[in-house]
Amino acid sequence: MSSLHGIAEWRPGFSRRATHRGLATAILATLLAGLATPALAAEDPPVFLFGWGGPGTDEGEFNMPRGIALDGDGNVYVADPYNYRVQKFEADGDFITEWGSQGTGTDQFVLPFDVVVDSSGNVWVSDYSNHCVRKFHDSGGNVYGHVLTIGTPGTLGTGDGVFNLPWGLAVDDDDNLYVADNYNHRIQKFSSSGVFVTKWGLPDANDASPGGYFENPTEVAVDSSGNVYVADNNNYRLQKFAWDSDAGAYEFETMWGVSSGGLYGLAVDSQGDVYVTDYAGYLVRKYDGSGGLLTSWGTSGSCESCLGHPCGIAVAADGDVYIADNENSRIQVFGVAEPTNVEGDANGDGATNIIDAMFIAQYAVGLRTFDATQLLCTDTTDDGLVNIIDAMHVAQFSVDPTATGGVLYKQLWETPADDALLNPLDL
Image (cartoon, rainbow, N blue to C red; front, side):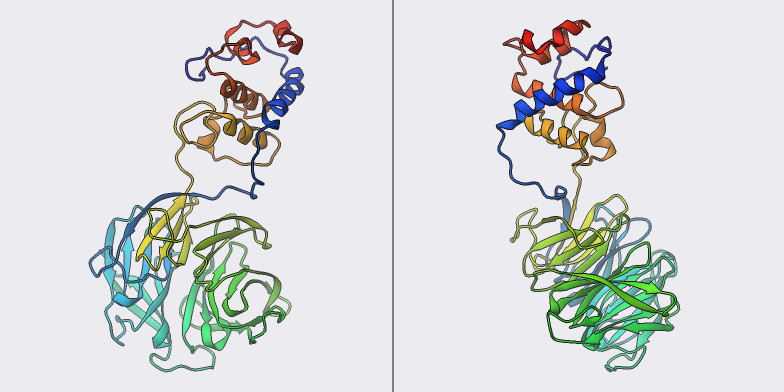
């Protein structure tokens, strides 16, 4: 059994847990009633974990990075447009390799804007001002070479398989490629071998236009069910589409507004939640798949955790969020902080106090979730559960950690089993 800051353990002799629940709820209500807190978002924003980069041309430096992607091993790929290259890193930011230079050759770029990696490790790059998308493959030893090109380099077009300033890229579970064809106001879909499959979208410059109309779509993302999300940039909204096998086309599902001066990053995590960067607002917003806002975060500036015009965004399997911080020429990573090993520390800040009690109480009634490591830090009774009893223990501890004044937590933690001591009138 573990204990709170040296206070004696929970005694297993207290067996009438069901009768304790009502008392625990009443105690928590009293303890928390006077605690003024702002309205909580659907979930807490992630915290800053680490970052790397800075302005420059050396390995690991950037010149206004745009797109960012992760492969199945967690490696990070960054479109570094004004250095005319793609850089590859390990998940912690250690440099692996780079390729590209300024030019129109098959292994060169005019302005690489976005990058995505398929399940085989092939890397697709949108060369925005060159009106094409190129596919690269690692021939061994992290040496990436050109495989094929979609579009006509240097020439814009409106037909199938050609582009007018291609921007965002995405791949689905079958390695089909999706391209946000920015100035053609449409999405195009291709097979993994670059063969045109379908397209959809009608040009429109009306913020109130119906679904399926786009004005300069910038980004595209696909969830595990094959739903396609589009950042309809100049209409300030996200649109969601699903494949209709009967119609043989993508059909509009829903859309929601996003106040922004640039929807330049879009990603979907394994749970189907949607992340979008707000370039002018210095923010990242997270929604559920129907457009319900879950959380948002971001502070303008160049401080350690700040965002200066966030662009590309990618979400790792463990939930860490990688962001191309365009103005600051760096990569910023946000996620759930590793909790310290303090019993009852629900928010992982190394302290046990009334805030933790509130978190655990919310968890007990289904208003908050924890990851597995945090659960280990909130089971104050070592019974494998995190519930209202644990919240009561933490709340009591935070009221009087020195155990003076005869408060109930001292009886619960230091006195042998004696249900008579649970009579609130004895307080």
